[in-house]
Each structure stands twice: as C-alpha cells, then as structure tokens.
Amino acid sequence: AWASPGTLRTSGALFWLAMGAWVNMILFQCMFVFTLLLNWRMTWTRLEKFRAQIHLERGVRDWVAVTQEYHALDQFVDELWRYRNFGTAVVAFLAMSFSSMLSGILVGVSCKEVTWEIVYFSWASLHAAFLVTSLFAMASISSRCRSRERNRESIFYMSMQHFGRVPTAHRLDHEIFVKLVQWNPVGVECGPLGRITMHGAAIVFRILIVLLPSAISFASI
Image 1: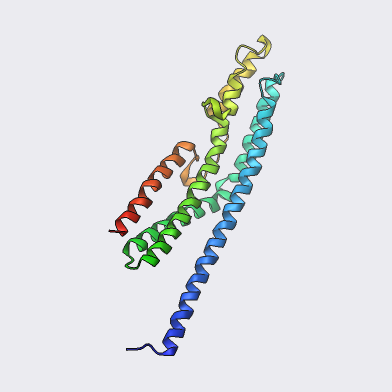
Image 2: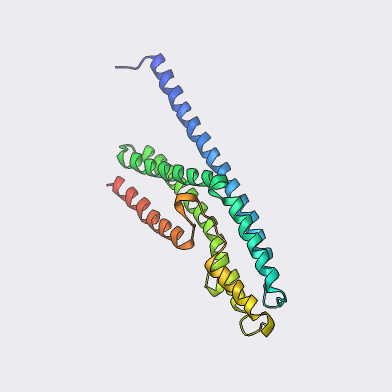
C-alpha cells in the first residue's frame, strides 16, 4: 500500500526535526569543548609562567616566595575548575558525552541498514572523541605539575633539579616546596570523578579503543 502524501510529509518533517536536534546538540557540545579548552589554555599559561620561575638556568633565590606563588597557583586552578563552579558543567558534559556515545553504539548495533549503522557509529565516535579530548586536556594539568617523567619537565621534576645546587641557608625552604608539590599537586578535580590524571584518562582511552571497533565488528556480522 502506498503511503498518503500527508504521511510522507509528516515523516519527512520528523526526520528533519530529528536532524536539527542532532546538529543543535553537536554544536552545543562543540561550544562546551571550546570553553573547556579555553579554561585549559588559561590554566596552562599560568603553569608555564610559574615553571619559568623555577627553571634551573635562572637560579631561584627565594624559595619562600616561590612556595607562596605556588599556593596562589593552586588556588587559581581550584577556583577555575571547582566542582561548584565550572566543574559541575564538566561532570554533566562528560556524563552526556558518555551516554550519547553508549546510545549511539547500542542503536548502531541494533540497526539493520548499513547507512544508519554508519550514522550512529559516527555519532558514537564523535562523542568518544569529545570525551577523550576533554579528559586528556584536564589530565595534562596535573601531569605538568607532578609527573616524574623527564620529557614532561613538570614543576616537580624541575624543582628536583635544584637539589645539590641550593645554598645551605635555603635548603630547608627548597625541601618544603618539593614536598608541597609532591603532596599537594595542582590539578583539576571534578566532584565525584576526583582528580583527573593521565592514568585515568589512559584507562578510558584504552576501553574506548577496544569498545568501538568491537561494536562495529559485531554489527557487521
């Protein structure tokens, strides 16, 4: 039986409304990612300015002042990313990205048409990219502060380079600063997620890098 023109117009209108809702949601998430990366850039710039002050070639003379500036840096990052402020939106965004990715995978697996499988798996992949990009951006802040890897040149690593080069009168102040960075590292904390670290971001990435291809392979059977 042929569908009536009214039915076709209704189905067409519903299709374009759904597409409009999808595009609107993607634009909203792109705007949020832009805002998140803007906050990340502000934090990263502040971190780099602080790192420049403790560079080995410059030679730090007043470790007490450096410690006070570190406290100011920690307060700046905390207020910018605090759960009651921007952190609440970050948690909501990550939850929405994960749920959108998961729904895209589930619908894509259950689809019978190849075209819609491509659409839904592309949708899931896009939200997975949002999720991973956001996590690694936030985790890089904590890594820049207390990572022990030489190539990252973190604040902790750079402060350790001063051991044996600090005058006797300033050694205690230097050790206090090193312990402060070790036990109270600057980083992004988002409520129930806790501190966002490279280790946690890497775990999420490994799960997604296995989950998405597995779902696509299962759907193609």
